[in-house]
Length: 220
Image 1 (cartoon, rainbow, N blue to C red):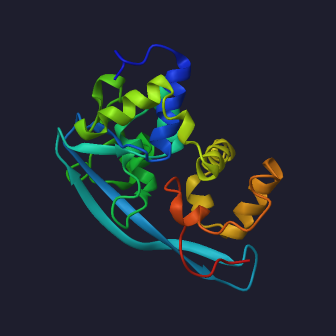
Image 2 (tube, rainbow, N blue to C red):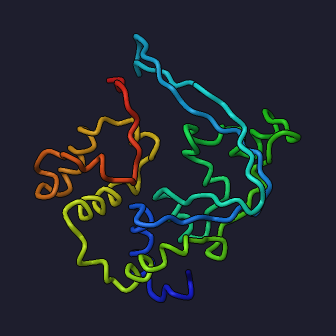
């Protein structure tokens, strides 16, 4: 990929397209890994903050060396650009499992709580560089259109809205945003651009692929 991307603007175009899921990026796993992943649930209570979070499900995920790990989130692309993306960062949103359990993300906590015979220690995971990033051959034409800017004419209202959504997400916790009410997110986006977000969202949240919002009642 690096041999085709010559300028920071081209890199920005490619990353934004990746975040919007116009095409998908994958990092090849450099480690035989066993990761403990969890899915969270929430329960309402009568005292502040009026809900508690707990593990609804835990499962060990095995990924052999050479396995392809999707690069999907804004913080993934930000870390990749800065050269600090780690394989462990990519273990998110696998099937219905949300993230790696806390003690496997820190060497000290791992030593205290984990069995190294069954799980891979955090220090064993490698940094992901551009040399480890791949796309599907079928997406090459889309990549070249993005790099050249030829896809710029295709920017309809949905695309323009998604770019502002991505900008708003930069300093946000994706997990927290996925649990927000869509109406609350829309209000925040309306503050950034009242023209694009001044009317009802209609299909915006259904059509965007940047964040998967959780269904169900959210606590107040």
